[in-house]
Length: 173
Image 1 (cartoon, rainbow, N blue to C red):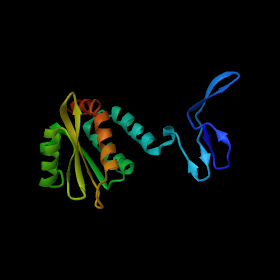
Image 2: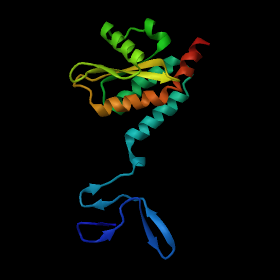
Image 3: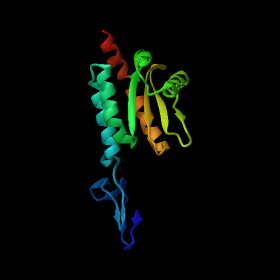
Image 4: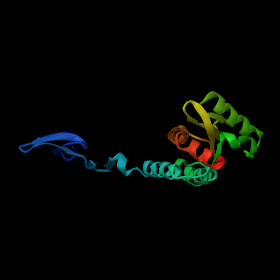
């Protein structure tokens, strides 16, 4: 039980309370003055990320997946731009410049996020499936990238690893 500023005792969101009819859980938001605790189900970034992953699963071609990532990921993460390139297309894709290409290669070789600049303005996030690189997501922000942006891009890459190889192989078939 929590005590509000008015002195009333009330259950916190998700805290079990007992009644004469048994136990119940109050999952509603706690409103205490200016404080509003929202459920993770109300998070627009989480909703957008789930929608992006669902849309990626429906992709029949790597080009479609690349367009989705370029269109949706910047809005979700707050970056200026995003590019996805499957490993089999890396030699043919113009990744802005040689520095971005080296960054993508380093991220794929190490299997982790690599970035350029201080604060980093460009980062390469490897997309892995079964321990091997299937593609890379490059993100950039002129004002510098922050950890939450890198974490969200890495989460998208991690969850799309099993989806995107099918999109890449669908193009080759």
